[in-house]
Image (cartoon, rainbow, N blue to C red; front, side, top):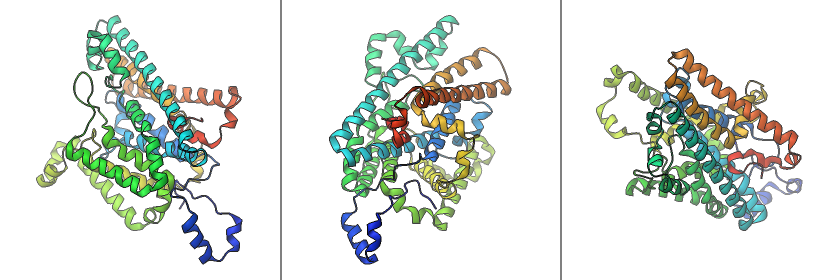
Length: 419
């Protein structure tokens, strides 16, 4: 089985040594972290990052036919877990190599530059999003749009609200992912430095912080009241776990992932999660769930990344790695090309998806239509995202003369682009 983090091939000189000598030397000389060899792009990451973008867009629309195809209706986790895990993985892949080759200072400078780029993208998206909502609410004389999208405080106190928005404390509806990612990326230099020392200890510290978050109710406040929709103190666990997998953790877990016992545990858990979610939509099945289990399990908190959500994602990821090898021929299929292209340009496509989600919401609210119209708007939004991804890809590979020199670092778009 080919894991996501394939080990770097050994040197020919090692073949001349005895097996015992080579093993002893490896234990002494091996670095704490192991990076995948540079080379062909990891298309599985692009595929599932693109899938996460599509699912996030569909989930941001009012409930429609395609909504029932997203994974949140069949288990505890959803596209957000996929997105954050892959973001942590790709960030560590790009900047972990930069730290090993150029040192902590160089890697930190590159990370901070990328944080600034994502922050600017967030501010730009915030501005366009406000303009879009304000124009629609004014033109159609419907203030409910402003209230529903969470910008009433901006209209009442624009000066204070803009400052709070720049501090990432004020965000309209559907704009919570990028602020979370900005905060996580700010701590990436520390994460990589610790992983360069002891990756397993670093993951353990992440687990401790996650536990303390639940024990002492740690959170970041939001404006004008409340807290962040995605608590960075909790969601850092998924980000750090992704980084840990990229820096050799997935390779070290390969034997566990290939175990039949692991496979059946994951299948049983996913099936159980499916039947639990089924009771949410079919109340008649609620009596099947024992009250003791309900009291222990609910609420399944998304804000603080509930353990059941994290475990559900792990089960999905384990089965995916097992049954979708790195060299799967389907990754070259033209049918999956739109998904992969969206994943390769995730920052731009994510921002576009947020904009399109409100446009779709507006059309569905103003034009009465059935399931067909809902499905049509969803499909049109996805086609626009694919078209934009194709244009960006064409520009980067044809118009940008320096694109061919960026190499494998392009594995991480949100993490670092091709920088």
